[in-house]
Length: 352
Ligand SMILES: [Mg+2]
Image (cartoon, rainbow, N blue to C red; front, side):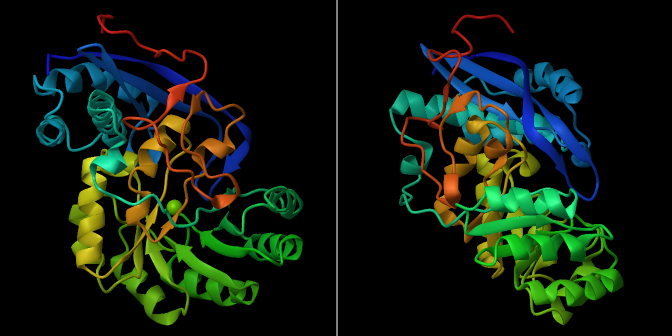
């Protein structure tokens, strides 16, 4: 493959409703679109930076020139690219992910097949959830009602109003399976009190009850509660998996946390080897980012791929999980196309 031209531009994604978690509330996801052109094909990738992992749209835009320089001459050498990108920076996972995803999209388009087909996966992903951000009990119940097509809800917790919020949601949706995500808001002691209080609402699992670094706290919670406990912020990449084994029931894999599809696949293999369950999650991202994650969905136990459903408008056609049923993208590469610029947002031969 000929040496590629790498391009990028900011991708601002206004949300339909403000989205609150225990740490912050978001109204616009400030992401970055990446294009890699070679031999008449353009691969697309999305960076969805998260302040928790030390990234922002500005940091991604600042790092991309340096990371683009670090890519190998052959854009098909994606494993080498992953190594080179990690060598260039251990941090900046979203910036690395956007480039890595664009390389997979480019390879798939050249070969005329989706990445999941290339990996020999079957097209039957597990169910995905719809996330209800922190708000007033009334508004959370309204959102739960509006999401009536989703049998599986994920509710953000970690505030003094958790009990009232869950009560309102359970009242609005007696049929739903409900999982909760505290985003590390509790100490182990607080988590056990909170979980005992929330247990009557018939929950499915709890994500990141304690701070990411509190491994003993995580183990204490997992041993004491009957709910399956998943580590999200506490399991960034494959290297984190061994120390989580025996301390929780599962992990949450996100492309934007670990640096792309290759690193996510490694994390999935590591989790399986250690007997951990796998939830595939996402940031707030467009249909492009969700299509990228969907490539790995058949390898996971459960999904939380609703990032593009939270947007006022999705600029990409691709994978989506309306009603929690993920439609696997069938197009080549990542299988997403721009709605506003169907040919491609970037053209071969454009400048960096
Ligand atoms: Mg989470």
